[in-house]
Amino acid sequence: MQGISPACVRVLYCLIMRIIHTADWHLGNQMHEIDRSVESGAFLDWLLQQITDLEADVLIVSGDVFDTAHPSVGARRQYYDFLARAVKDGLGNIIITGGNHDSAVLLDAAKELLGVSGVRVVGSVSGISPKDMVFELTGKAGETCGICMAVPFVREVELRNCIPETVEDGDVYSQAYCALYTAVYEEAEKLRAGRHIPLVATGHLYAADLEGRLSGAKSNEKTDDGVKVLDVLGTLGNVPVSVFPEQADYVALGHIHYTTTVAKNPRVRYSGSPFVLGFDEALIPRTILCVDVEAEKQPAVEKIEVPAFSVYRRISGTLAEVKQQLQSMAEAHASIPEAKRKPVYLEICYKKELGLSAQEYLEPVLAALPASLSVASWKPLEQKSAAAFSGFASMDASELKNLDDTAVFTELILSKAGFQKDSPEAKAALDVYLPLFAEIAAGVAQGEE
Image (cartoon, rainbow, N blue to C red):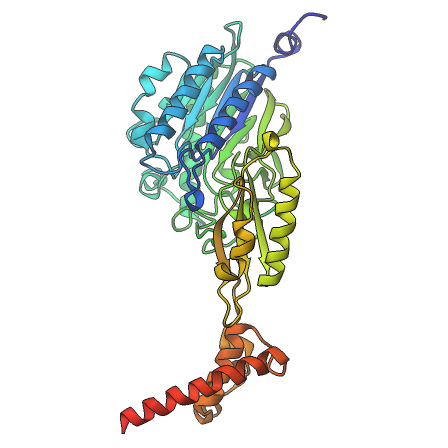
């Protein structure tokens, strides 16, 4: 077998299709106003090299190609330039589906032109039939190597049109999803026409029963940067694995930013995003998936970690602790040869301290940071409310009514600063602020007389 490429070996022994599965590129993203065009360009260059090195047959991008419905000219240029280079390098099958962040109109605008080169785009399900979401995939020798059911993100108004005439007890929208995937699967089977070739599907949604970071997430929870974990409406964030056809040999999903399986099913997976999209995601490995798919066999999946072209880190603690961490980080960063330094972006999560401005306190150490190490976000650590920190929560109405103004103000100072009631810090703060409060209160009382 010496001299025969891995792709030819796969064809000789059995019909195996090699897929690169990725999603959630969010091209044009500017998290905390960071220009990420260089970072995204470096990823796309790296991805092209992976496609070549791995001799992939198919690239699947499962939604959220862009970060917004109106991406910048630069983001669009990166997208089309990548597709042109991938086709020029010989990749004959590229599947692009729309996500909830994408404009379906924008993605679909060039679908006919791109289709000539083997780039299949499905921006939305609106105005198309299930047959329009099914594509035959060809290998490098021109042979048919698989069938793809390219299902994009489905908005609630679109999903309502898929609700069966007769519904059973349970989640109506899950039944609508099941009806949609069933209709697309039936068209895929017609195209497969009894051939023993693999069948793959896509989707961009939040599936139930995930493993890892969002395993217990609720629909009203938010990520650190304020984006809803379940970026969908109503009950659409509870899609069970049963909606996907059992006959699909692999289901390539997007929308979740880390790699995980659904209901521990090795055939149904999220690739995760290749980029950090919130400082709360900073330590999550970024991956693409290389998947060898064979009809009626469990897929062989390899996680390939994406290099960190930029580094994102969160620093937390008191202002003194943050200062020390910044100094240590600056020293470590300065020890790296300048040519090998990567841009480092920091989020500072600091504990509020009465009488101190975080920016002013840290200004000397910030001014000494190398140019490639910068602070992108400031965030005060959440403090307990006055009721939670003090005895307010356990008091009944009559007790609260009998508290004098000084007692209330004392509790508010302690809760805002996070001080324990009998600590030296609490005493020092009260010595400063209680006289000021008394003076203000006296002035207000005089004005009312």
